[in-house]
Length: 580
Image 1 (cartoon, helix red, strand yellow):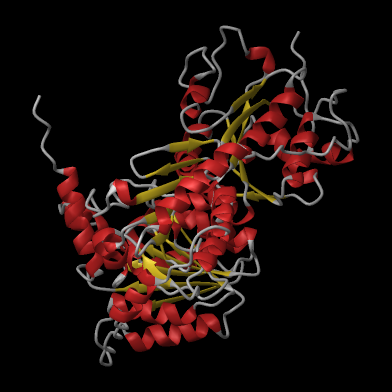
Image 2 (cartoon, helix red, strand yellow; image 1 turned 30 degrees about the vertical axis):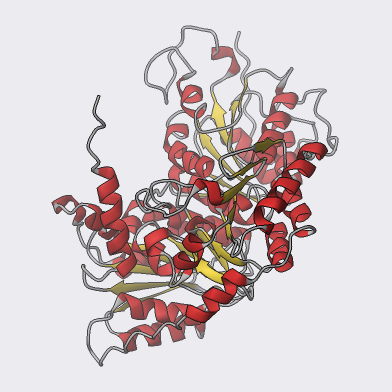
């Protein structure tokens, strides 16, 4: 006879037994999570009761699983770890795109799925929310390629070990993990769980001391003989927790420092020898000339893909490079040193390099300050470059910029970030629509910062619903939706009628979502004077509410960097097959 457990929220809160659900909730709080993003389904409801009952844990219901995953991604970017809870298969296969994005960006996201009743495993039963086969492993197999660890908890005997191993693996690897919990196990007291669990701890990864010493000596010899070496920060500085070490090295050695586009925000742009974003042909002014003319370059945590290399067109030579990955150092064409933590390597290097400011001195000599875009005449259509001129003036240590995939990538790269200003975008995976959920998650993680999200209209149509959740949470982000009538980034790679979208009344949509509940203000702007007034209102009278500004611009109004980048990526995509 099957056991049936029916535990309501009140009885869960009143329960004092050490249960699996309580253990999961306690562990999430212990690692620094105070908000979990969820979509309820019949297989996860009892688990959600336990999460609600946990002191210090806030359950945030999202409009769909994809946005719940994107929100956990945005949350992890600030807090260092995020979590989402969905139901079996229909929820899991919906959230999986966001989990894949978190994997590509090296973000520890704990994805918890409410699974089938444990009695149904190993039977020939067909259950709902599946594709109609008596095989419950389909969801697990899908997650195996986009998570670093998978735990299927369908009995209580090893559940404690599986949960703790999954969470610790996510933190150690800085990748998402998948945990499936049978719906009938969550509320059962079990002896391996305690009301006050043993504190969670992680053993730090250590460098091989002899290998570290040898690698540092080889790097010192390589760099000290260079005439004009430079340093470039990459996105894996985050996963290596080596940002401070990178800055310490820069302070010590005097090199000019740049960032790859996907590392913007990880390296302080107020540093006295910061020269901008290195992005090949679409770098910030004078940056590529200094980096590519250097006779040695140290890349810390780089990812060289077709997007970051502008269609494989970077003018770099491997024999001039030192590539420092989170646990590995490669000098020129060799040798390579393993089991070396990036942070340790950079700090040791800072103690031994000869100071050399030649590259920065060269940059300083050739640098010409940017001109300002001309103001629009009254009642003349607003230009995108003027929009970002005004966004620049909004930035401070109390703001964070979130840039959606599209032309916002390029326009936001040109923003000069003041000290303490955050910056996030998803370059490796590039999933359009990511920014709406990420804005929700990031703003929830850092309520003392105001998020400024720059989103194209095509991307916004993908995930617009969770502006509703922002309102429920009382968030005060400023969302700029740039309405140019289509997928502009795709137009510049390859144009076609599929890049034109149905125009929406975006402010009308947000007003409908608002529906008199929550604190929201919207504005539609077509001219510069309207934009100036909207920003004044959003940062003044409406500074404590969610502000949504629809900016209407010409469909062909793009950054010059997108035009260059698009043509190069199109060329890379269109390469003919190699001869057989």
